[in-house]
Amino acid sequence: MDASLKEQTYKRVTREILSVIEGEDNLTARMASLVCLLHHAFDYYFWTGFYVPDPNKDAELVVGPYQGTLGCLRIPFGTGVCGVAAEKGETQIVADIHSFPGHIACDFNSKSEIVVPVYDRDKNLIGVFDVDATSLGAFDEIDKSHLETLLATVFSE
Ligand code: SME
Image (cartoon, rainbow, N blue to C red):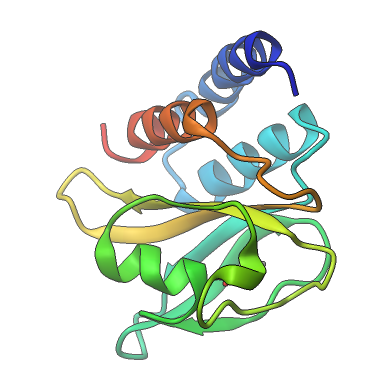
């Protein structure tokens, strides 16, 4: 996707998301609305969703609101791209998931992905936001900067 169109689309969808969730404090409703609007805004978003820490299990993520094909249900911290993002607290951009050690293949069509850790106001990890694409190298610094800002605005402020 052309960089300037990508920028414009992130700006437009960010406004839509903030408008839709205004006044809604339920976490699941906020996550589900953000996922839906982003997933349908970009053709290259193939799987879009959250994995959240399971309060009943130590260091394990469980699938949250998502759109796309069937996702894996559980991912241990430190495993796969999501587990590494959760453990390190850093956004992961993976241009070719088959080159990522321990990658978890939920759908063999996925080829590249971005995973952004998400925090609440008190800086507790409340999940990771994961987007997969069916093309190699779909995600870049534009995706990273817009998604990090949007997720911080929606969940940390
Ligand atoms: N690819 C991810 C697993 C989740 S799915 O792609 C939906 C990972 O390695 O963390």
